Length: 300
Image (tube, rainbow, N blue to C red; front, side, top):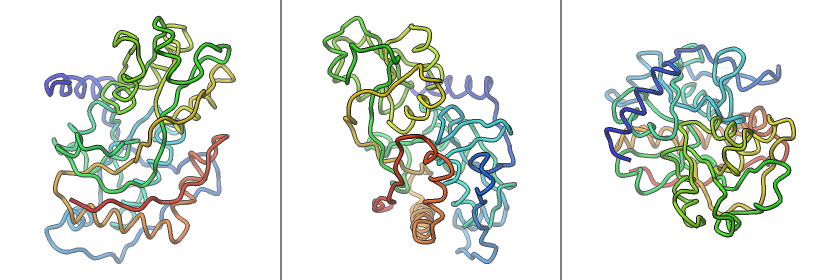
């Protein structure tokens, strides 16, 4: 997608959804969900991103608002999910509490833009690490590895996996514009015209419900969340056919900030905060498993 189109998409997303400055209210309604412990004694080298954010006492984080379990705008008006909790952990290590976090909705197609333009300090939004994106931004992580699958209506027996799309050339499959899943599924299509894209996965789910498309494809944990909210209308089919390592997107070349995030998440995995972040959000979805924090890539 051309840069001008990305910027237009970014502007549209801001006009429609707004840039919300919200006081985060935890990953869900579970009373046992605790906020990340704020490290009020942390110190950082002057001039680093960490020192700047700590001094300001606030941070802006991009995430998604339409993905159950990872980033979904809750009844409180604040986003909830695993990505949100990961963002809180990173902020807490800087001495920033939940009231110092501003959440910005970042659909797939605008994630690099909001980082490059300085609209956010980081993006935690089911953001697959890949070489193309690394040309524009840097990643810290991965902090989770998902796998791409397909979701169909519960009464659909014709589509059982990605291979079914090529043998059913009239079938339409939906994914998010600018996403890795939208790129990956092309290998399995009889023609490019089978792919339908929207800015949000919630629109794909609506299109599936209304029979405008026959399948939705993205990462399995996102699909499980959509299935869970469908009242039995949808199901996930087939086995995962990709590996999607999720990373935290930051300004390109900010290796010190990258290393801080890597170290913070490693500490969270050791003290149980990472597992709690999962269990109180995506881990509540039937069929999910408690992940192990993956080994981080070298910061660059």
